[in-house]
Image (cartoon, rainbow, N blue to C red; front, side, top):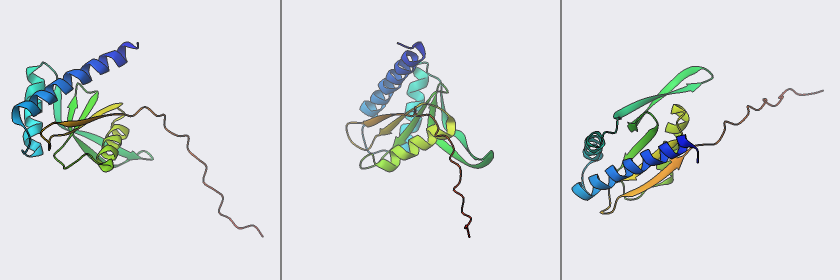
Length: 142
């Protein structure tokens, strides 16, 4: 097995352990910010480096056109997006994919603390960028 992938998988497992600990300790019903602070604390207690509100620049044709702020960035390789929603939805997955596109990272954990049993999804972005297509010729021929 690729050692980078194995290291990434081990980090993901360690972060999930911290997530489960936060969920088991706090339960459901708090605001997202409370879970973010608790998870940051738990990660630090476990010796895992994490940054809140990590910023990712979005570029278009070499120009900065926006910025995304992920809830937590772990060890500069794993994005953690927290939710307190009735259920995880496709727009939450799309948000994670956008974080991964903007950051160039490969993995995100999408976590929902709303229910008594924490809900989570691992999102991996490993597709190569598509080749640019030539614009169709729009001129009219006579």
